[in-house]
Length: 504
Image (cartoon, rainbow, N blue to C red):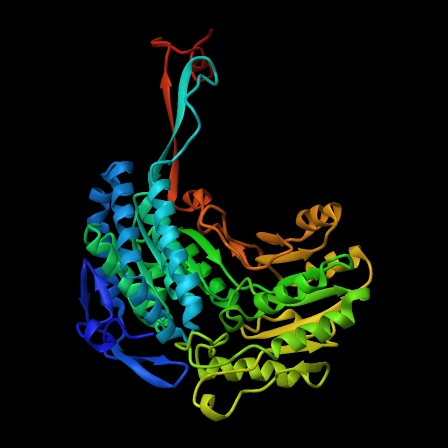
């Protein structure tokens, strides 16, 4: 895939996007965007400091009256233009996403970018459907109705695993509802978030509605969350960092939306289509090199299918092609960094002391030695309470455990602190219905694992956080619900006044 632009030239003015302009950071500290497939720097930029966050929030606050005062139809038209601009620039977005993340270009081209364009098109339509309860006379004497209003300046923080899609998930529902936003992407992967904001400007969305500050979490991120003019924080990332975000947001009584870690169970009952389950497990565990909060990480397989499942998953994993992300035949790219690769490898090395590494469990050499690559890995024989079963690894590692009864399988699926996503594999309608009822997760797939839709909500249970991305449900996060009540009696002295003064 050819480069549609030169990264250094595109961001020569800086990696902050404030009030419709690219600007340099003012922290005095620099950071490199590194291609994890080669270890080479593709952009060196100055990180945002607290002054940059203040400037971005001020720009968003200044833009809020005009944007929130626009009609839903006007916001919808702007977002339709935005979707069109994103579609026109699809190749550039796919290139930049693969460059900064190491994603195989077929994943960027067929999943990340079209998913983002579809999100923009969905919220363009959703902008016109901010619904409340129908007007009615609930007590007979008054007419009540519900307004949905924009809440103000939103301060959001997005992770590095899906930088483009996470920018869209944070920005689109917020601005569709009439809010303005400051987004802090991960400093590792700012390119497509900046391009996303630039595309919004090209589409005619007013300056200051969408702002990007690229800085470190401890400085720019915490300042954004604690800023007195930010009325809501939406954060996607680890549960540990989410707890810190919640502490800061709570201190300033902000609305809070958290999409945190996951440890998705993949439950295979003994009547499942084995071939489908095997293919689903490999795809679901290896998508984005396993760096996905919803990735299949714990396969629970009922005893009659267990041995065949382990054998066939290992065999299929061994066919997965690691390579240059820009080679159309590459199936699996590197992890985001060498540090993340080493973290994943350490989990597997510790597991060798109590479990069996069936396949993988190593970094490749040769032409891939300079990149942050790690082979697809299957681990068997681990105990339910072991680290590799309970902790989020965020790499191309699947752990498989057997179970005997349906009760046991569902209990094991629920036996971690997390509850973001899960899947159940069965031909039995009653088993499927039970699994979808009883597995504690924000999304439960049946006979598939991973697909997402703009129309459907994404969010978790338990330590996976609360609140929803995508779908019309996201407006619950980004709008203020106001009850308006009109008196219909034209009577000066109401009957209820007697409870305060006088008699009936």
